[in-house]
Length: 421
Image: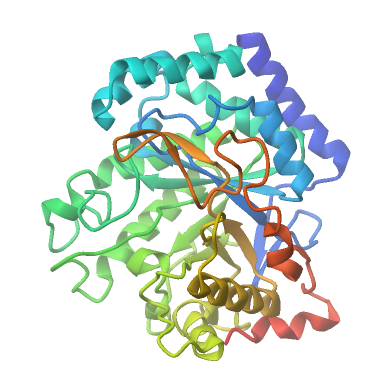
């Protein structure tokens, strides 16, 4: 097992160099650039790894090799890989023990989880002696050997499905206005320690090019009634810590209201001096996102909302200017409602005009267990429930020019980068 991991780590280091990828990445104005100063457009797919089993989903259906090959073939160059603080602080947990514990934590039968574990080992034999962190390492290194970058995303503190206002993962427990519903699992010290642990681990896995500090921060009741003081405080602490631990990775920062609100930056800039040349903003947008209502069924109105709440950070030569990745968007892949059709058409147009980076939710066609259901079918999944191929073969065409890189520093069309409305 140790020899296998060492070989994968070596291949993950050397092969992308042969393929011409130049790391580390950095940010300049509204662009993500490689070490040669060339623009890198992140075209990512989310891969969930933040739930009760503490490993990336889908390994009971397909091998890591198969899934990495599929991702590469479809044209993605990045995976947004989610993890929990529970995982970050328990790297030596055996996968077998994680599946056994998941039965109790998820409220499902031990036999069901034992069966899933057996399927994982059948498809991925190395897992039998592996820790959960080993699995993350094998995946990240194989992705990088295929030229695919990894954006690590701290999705939750307690390993579980996300998100709502009572799941205990929404807002820092040491912040103003604590309530147990939204913050009982979000221990600030553990969060910082978990980020530091993952940043240190990532130093040995070159494919990790970016780290998102926290997914979908969301206040509830009396929380966040102090002019975003807690957001500025804890985000700065986290960004400083990640960069001090691993200066190579981009630091990805989302706003409040479930990563839909960066408007406070207009009045007070975030101090990113602790991670110079590494800051990247992120936003989320779904058809059901309350921050971007489609009350008038007008794409122009919705686009204006995208720009008002988040997209303004792409406007160049401002104190807040930086790259922005749409790190979550998606819709049901089996049947598309009229509302979803309007949503994705409008969002794709917005993203095409701004040529921004993106990460679609989600790769997997199922979860080991979600909300008490074993082998849960994920309708938003790009893959079928058996994780074999497209659930919706028309997906790529729906995104259209979002796949292309049409702007960048020095490009004649780069002026369109300021068109954030």
